[in-house]
Image (cartoon, rainbow, N blue to C red):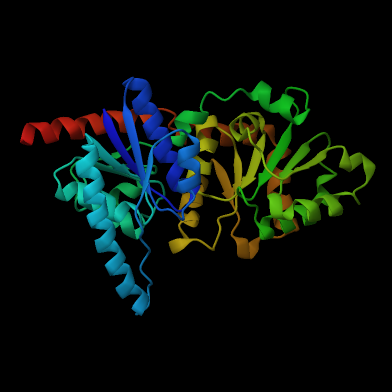
Length: 373
């Protein structure tokens, strides 16, 4: 198979694409991959580090208000569209898969104009503008949340497949997670993380919660601060009573997140789509604090989807403080039966077979395209 992947801007778009590419390569040894992104996006660093050929086009997003910037965006789109057509004609892929971000627009649209089968994957409950536009031209659509399907009601081949990053973490070894933290297997701990770069509001609430956390017996806290907040957190944690300090560990970043997540009793997290895919794939209960600083506030519907299923508790950032966070964490950690119910609900939402499902959907799109020729 010759497969073109496109998606960019954030890891939430890039890692699902890489997971799909990995699945295709495992299913069909000899599969050739090409990734098309932007030179300024994270994908320009992440993708080459995975040994995958990378080409770039330049594109920017539309502003919601009238602006000359939008005129320049149209010009960039047309230039990126022409560049994408050149790359696709040269590479001759069997299918093009887009996982979101502005760069998908010209690449997937160019593929559709050339008669190349296309699949787009939507990670969030509420689709982004690019995927809404591309759904008119895509051969197939895969979504992470069942709640997204009504947005693609006019697409013939739309499927609730899950998020392919779930397939990468489903077999994570919790024993390795405990060992990497220096904890005995089975030690109850809360994993608190505000995203790969950290989140000031989440970090502040965790700090405010710590005095009350002392009352949670033998429960430990693993606090992933983000690199830019690590030194400040270490300074503040140095003032904790010795008994509590033994149970609190701050880390700037976790390189083996799936293993640590598999070992966690509870996670306090933002509600990005990839994070939720990992959480549900492993069946971990969660306290979710959706970021209000993302396009279309898309993390809140993501969190609501888990909360309504009983897999999570949601705290909006406007309601977040040490007291509200401690109340949620304490009520879950003090009630093993409730925690197990939440874990079961989380596992019920998990779709560890997501990458395989999307791979099969790709094959269907390729076969359908060949029948039409």
